[in-house]
Image (cartoon, rainbow, N blue to C red; front, side):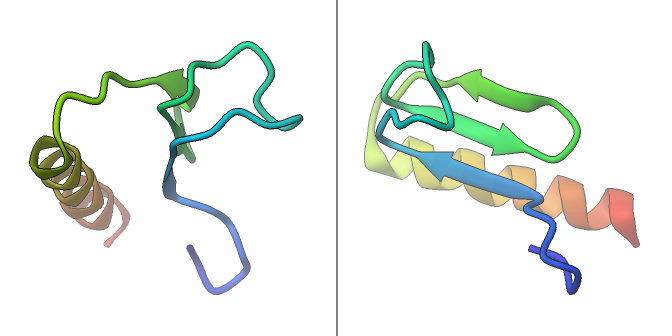
Length: 61
């Protein structure tokens, strides 16, 4: 999240009113919007998230 409150990246594992029609596992990306993601394991999920955080950091500095 940025200083002004903008969400850069968020992974969710539930569907709510904000994301109707999305699968249980999905991500919110500041540039790409909301996308379904496949959950294969917690380790893979964390690795993907960390890689995306690093990429966003590199893009925004």
